Image (cartoon, rainbow over all chains, first blue to last red; front, side, top):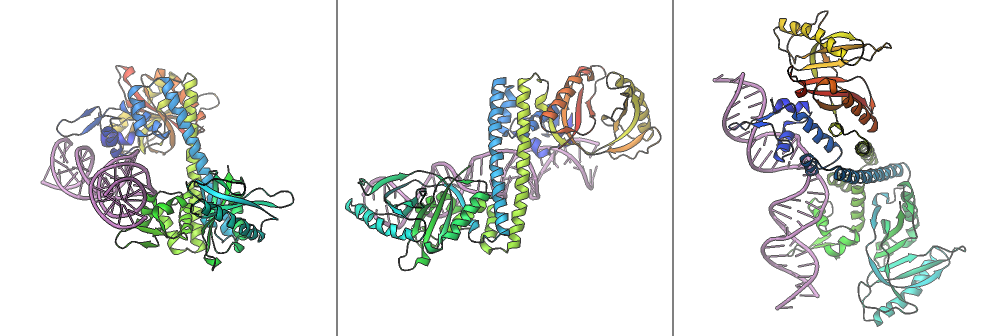
Length: 271
Length: 271
DNA sequence: TTGCTCCTCACGTCACGTGAGGTGGC
DNA sequence: TTGCTCCTCACGTCACGTGAGGTGGC
């Protein structure tokens, strides 16, 4: 018979832990003083304690360990629990490795001159977005996009108005450029779940939910190029790869003062 | 101005999280209704929210994020925190990978026939142990060890008695066998911090603290061989390697009924 | 008799999720 | 006026660490 202070060091645990396991019914002392409440352990209980600690080292919760200790489970159940555990730990490893790459990317960015906005990149799924949009073909990325927008927007706005609906946030997205560099531009407005029909020029579409790297740009779109560059470099450094063309959400638009504009840039990513 | 219910989905967070960040002072709403307490966020605050989420994705605590957000820290401090984070995540990855190997070892053990005691293996540092011991040379591992013990023990016991001390738990350990297979056997008794001198035959030594894989054996030492075999296989499967010879702690000894004996077997390991 | 060990509460940890109970705004 | 959104507590999560305050055993 060992006191709790003698038994605990045998298993390299604290007395508090033994009391906790007692409370949970995982490891009851062999005897408990009726008057004093003093716990007395038998050396033979070290085996059970070891088993408990081994299961804990596999990452099982004390609740699960309770099941495993109590019922001497059938091999099938044990195998099932171990397989599940394996999958979970595998996932944790993958997540932590991804995290490691992200930290590394930030460290590298500190060395270089990417002081732009590197700290603000977030990975997230896009929120569901239903928009009324039209398309135009621009000769390429750059200032010419403004022209496409000014061609598209009045059409879409008029269509929304005709449907007695209200236009929400402005949204744009782009298809892969063709060989000659020209780009199909999609632009329009969020419409929520308002009822609006499509026609030849204006389509109402639900944008697919994508995993994106997102960054918020403050100021005019004229200054957006270095931000996009930094974003793409960040994605690459973090071990992701590009999985499509960008989406732009015009969160705040000031026609009189572009420097106060706020735009969210989203880049679809994978891996 | 956006309500909390409008702002939250922009960052893919819950309103509750925004309230939490408000409470901690990490992201204060741009305005708060004086009467109603309603929070109002500006779209421009999305950038700060993004920065917060990005730092959270690196694994920083909200407390650390508070520092980083508040003070626009000098590059040196930022680099330091990132390096520390890198080291910590690296360690987590290593730990989870080790855990993964352990789970895998258990799964493989289920396939094979190692039903012995595979579930009871624990990795731990040995508790500090001070013993009075003597040595003997045995022709090899096996039943001949019993002879060595019966030669050593009376000597050691007599020595302890002469020092007016009391003998604790019996302990044995082994050196690497020589080329001819003969083994130097060390055996003795725990003496705690009692004052006992060494002489030519009996030494008082502090056993070094080692990382060991430990298993508890119930029954006579005649039956210990398959347990040792399973233990060594487990160590190998778990991605560790042997780093020395075994230690045996005789936790409970019954001279009249060996089947009730309890012995802890410890194997030093590394990596 | 004095330290030492043991006992039982009970709070704190971390980042929120999840009600409970109540109120302002369209 | 009725739902809807928002508000503020406050408990629960997980595996213990860490006192506080009190008592038995050598």
